[in-house]
Image (cartoon, rainbow, N blue to C red):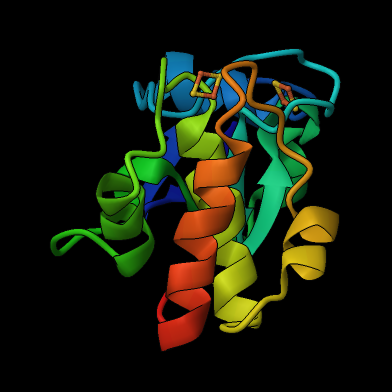
Length: 151
Ligand code: FES
Ligand code: FES
């Protein structure tokens, strides 16, 4: 049995400790906002927060995060939208949207650690892939957030 705390809720689950966190979040807990892209830690579609840090859940064994606070896109904004989500709307960032929950998890973790990231820091920190090419709009949204210090 594995004990996981996701979005403030504790789950006791009959899964192997080696099972990828992504599959447990989606298939066992039923939170499908976190996406599968590559399964090999390359694309970032599966990004969640583990103790506030962005982490790729496709390569995270659930047994390694049993004592952690895990946040998914569903738990990012328990009370209304966080500023990053509003900026995503204002700058019309999403296209197909598939990568965007992972993008928002990665960007919100960056902004929590560094409220005023430069373009260079953004590019170094956010290695998530968007096949629709929304990078210019992401940069614009993050620039607006960096100017206000909100994230
Ligand atoms: S699905 Fe995890 S990084 Fe691509
Ligand atoms: S918005 Fe389509 S993959 Fe990023």
